[in-house]
Image (tube, rainbow, N blue to C red):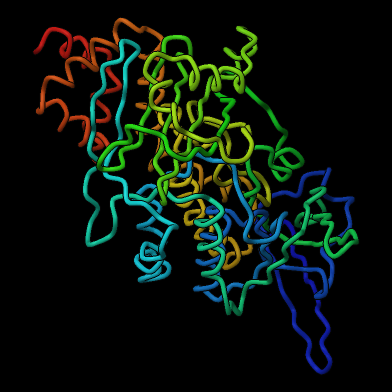
Length: 452
C-alpha cells in the first residue's frame, strides 16, 4: 500500500492534465506541513541550476529524451569562468555522443581551441618528464586547451532550438527550500524574484552551490579544498612544441603547483594552486607568490622576460574529490564542482563535470518515470559516480601526498625521465583501471625505487 499519493491538477484552456507522483516511503514530518507543488506557470519536472559543462550536458540529455526542464544561468553568455582552460578527451567524448560532429566543428573554429598531446611534470629539483595522453577512440582529439568563455559558450549553443529546455539567463538562484513532495526555488530573474516548484533539482552551480548549501549544508574541508589563481599572459617563452600542459611542483608550493597552459594565438594560462589548509597555515598571498615566481624564479623569469599580463590576476576555490561525500539527497543531485569532483593532483574538473552531468540526467529520467525522488532512490547516482571516478581520484590523492616529500617526488620523476617504459606506464594510468589500483599501493613506489 502506498504511503502517499499526490495528484497535481494542471489547468489549460480546454485541457486537464493529471500528474500522479507516488512514493513507497514515509514522508518526513518536516515535509508534511509545507505547501504542495504549484501549478503550470511555475512548475518544472526538473530544474538544472547552472549552465556550465555539467548543467548543459544534463540539459542536452534531457532534451534528447524529451523531458521538459528549466535551465538556469546566473550570467549571460558568452561569460567567463575562472579555470585552467584544459578540456580532456573524456569530456569531448561525451559531448560528441550527445551532439555528433559538434566537437570536430568546434575544433575547427579559428583561435578558439589548441590541441594538446600530454602533460609535463617538473619536480622540485627542476627535472621534468613528459607524459603523453593516451589516444581516444575514433578520431576525436586527445584534448583541447580552450578559454572557458569560448568552450562554455560552445556548449551552451548546442541547446539552440531546444524544444524541451526552458532557459533563463541572468537568473540568480537565491534560495532553495523543501516543500511537500519537492523543492521551491527562489530565482531573481528579469528584475523580480520568482518562485519555482520542482520535484528534482540538479545542482550544477559550482563550488559555492546554493543547492548544496540550502538542501544539504555546505562544508568546506580545507584539507580537501584548494585556492587557485589564474592570469592570462602573452609572449611566454619556452612553451612545449606539442602544447603539453606544464605542472611545476616548486618546493615552496607543495603540495600545490605552478602551471603554464598554452592557449590559441600564442597566449598562455598561467596560475597556481595550494591547499586551503596550507594557505592559512603559511599565510600565503597567492597573487604575490605568482608574481614573485614570474619575476624572480631562476627559470621562469627568463621565460617571462618578454611576457605581458593581460587583464587581472583572478582567484577561485576548487573543491577536490579526494574524499567521498554524499552527492544526493531528497529531491536533489549535485554535479561538477558542486559535487566536489575536481582531480586533487592535476586540478582538472571539466571532464568529471561532464560525466556527472550525463549520469545525473540519466538518474533524472529514471526519477521522472518512476515518480520516486527520494534520497534512497537517487543514491544510485553516488554509487555510479564513485564506481566511475573513485579509483582515479584516489590515485590522484596518493600522487598529491607524494609531492609533500620533495626528495621522493624528485626521485620518482628522475626515474620516469630516464625510462621510456615507465613513461608508458604513467601514460597508461589515464585509462588502465587495474594499473591505477596498483599505483595506490605504496609498494608500487618501493618497487619503483629499487627498480623491481
